[in-house]
Amino acid sequence: MIDAVGPPPIIDTHTHLDDPAFDADRAAVVDASRSVGVRHFVNIGYAPDRWESSRELRETHPDVDIALGLHPQLASKFDAGLMSELKQAIDVLAPVAVGETGFDFFRSAPSFDEQVRAFRGQLEMAASRGLPVIVHQRDASDELIVELENWPNLAPIVLHSFDGTQRLAEWARDRGCYIGIGGLATRKSSKSLRELLARIPVDRLLLETDSPYLAPPGSASRRNSPANLPTIAAALGPLWNLSGEELCQLTSKNAMGLFGLTDGN
Ligand SMILES: [Zn+2]
Image: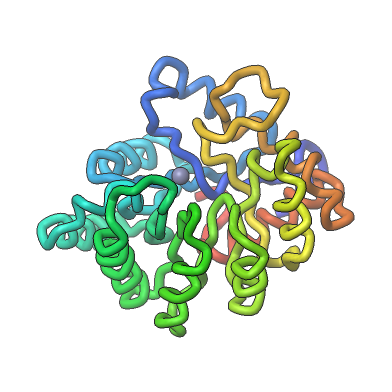
């Protein structure tokens, strides 16, 4: 997978290219990303309408793969009907992972009970199918550890756009979780986050943008894009004594193994 010439392969393991923020120029964003070396995009469908738009995107883009789940901020919608819809979507559309799911206690709603029910339902779907689970976590490091301790036999866990406590970082390292890194960690205010990330082994790192969110500082637009990944990799590589190119190579290998991606699919 290493090119003799041209940019190193890059995989954006967490993007929302189906977001309306890209409606006006989606094709141009995808082309610009490909031209800087982005080889695969994992588009995260986090709500029922996004499952469909993710599917459409994959249908027209051979380098797009999808994950399907329900975002924790939408957990109050997770009733029996939606659970069976999601199961069916997973079985029919064959995503590379379940998610993003998890815990988000930044706001007072949805309630803890609603988030637990939705998270457990999705962990069960991932476990029974042997699929990786992509976890969103905000202000919930301890609760996340408690819950995931109940699931010792999950396929790999991805902590996307990692922003947890030292305790969660250490737990994740012991558990062998994959850690998503992107624009957030490049911010000036993220010094302590960078210190935690530097102790994560390189074979567990994944590059991601979470675009259109989390634009890195200094980027031309407030809208993030997978085309920013070379800049993000160059900024973060030194945490592991790597160049940006080396970080791209390593994280691409990690992502391809984790999600079962093949070159040229
Ligand atoms: Zn996301």
